[in-house]
Length: 635
Image (cartoon, rainbow, N blue to C red; front, top):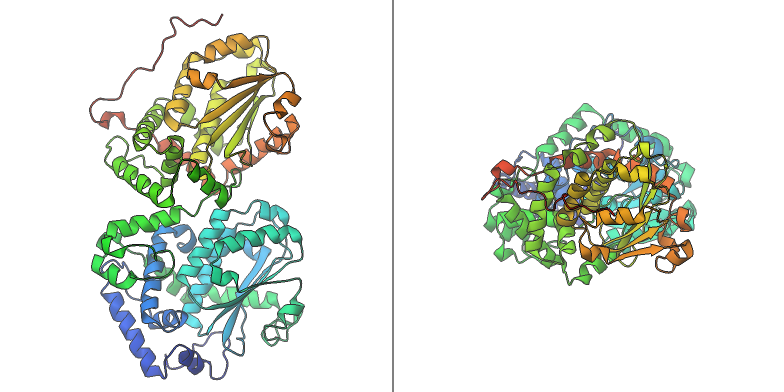
């Protein structure tokens, strides 16, 4: 590159090209050209790169962003291509023209046109208005596109960030996913890699201290030391050149934030920029073709997530598995089952798990799973294996047995599994005659699940609805939750003889087998309120199918006061004198979450998680359901 690129949205200081090169150890254009040649030659030799035709401007941008180091640029490019495989939801198939219309109504994101005197570029983000529809993943996708544009078009010493959170609301914070935040920040840090001189956050609401705590957890110690918190722009103007900042935020630059943001968006949307950045969607790695020697040479001593790897013992398959597991341990969550990283570690510690040990267990079980002809096509998530390991107290053999039964019993009960498709894609209530709630806070590592029957009219009662919904909840918890197990609270106030007579024992039997032998959630205690006159008959029915150990954990309470002696109020719904949401509020939360983007897709995909019994080795798997009804005695 002989001259700085011409771009309508980025300005440069008079001698910026030379000064940035000198900063990175390059005295002249010839040295930089030779460095780009060396990086390009290395790219062409990488068997595992699916795309090798990178523009020279892009490669030079990588070298500049990595402080002039060709070796770091190689590592950065390899990481970026690998992460496109692991995080396509953040880095691929971005529709810049149409995808961010709502996001741009909620916040401004752009690079300010004028660089600082020391050639740093200011990345500016400012929330315009509170909006509960805000999805942080869209912010990361948009920022990723901006950073890729920057690699082609900017030439700076690094970045400084200003993030104005004054219009960020508590309701937006309450739905923020730690998993998504951590994953997005990690992706940006691993793929862009430019020097970050400082991070300036502006907010005055103490409620947002919680947001800062979350963000700090996602950042390295080095970046945490560069965070500055401000109440207004006055103090920012003392540390960043006023000439760079727009007038409306105390600066001297001629254009408004809105004008800068709009012009930057228009520039990103030009056909030439779209074509160049969309080409990068194909820049992924083919892990089966990665050369071991190449990996050892390029990644030995690599900083960050790989510094503890013994690269001499790695093969390409293990490289991929390790990267996949690092991605997995970023604690993907959904808002209805929140937990902290500390709570996750406590759960693992309960059974002596270490993250490296559980990684080995997961990979061993995945390898076993891939060799099961009756299971392999159904697929399994690593997160689900971890939860099953926790429920099985670390026994791999118990987990294999549970997985076998989990997939088998689901296939034997399409009325409880596949029936979710119709209700999820329609508009009808998921919870008609009853309510279900799972505590949002962990009580000693456990969640409290509450069932309440709200309709005394038995004609609306269908026990299949309870099991259908419970298995949807169970599917989500196996993937997104982190807990030791459950405590149950059953309120039988409105149960009558009419309800009891509508219970199909065959359905109860299949459902109890799926729960006890398949998913394997541990139940530490069962608490019952408002036992009806037919309580004995209900008990006699269910004891035919429930393990004696579980029945021994059943406790009946006459009053709420008695219940509160064993279950603290802060973990109970408002209906029971607690501090959680009401049962009706939980209903609305669940119906909204179940029908939202990734959650809906995961639940629908759950219908495929059944075994193909025709392919089961050894036998066809058609074992009879345990038990008999010939001697069923409800008296």
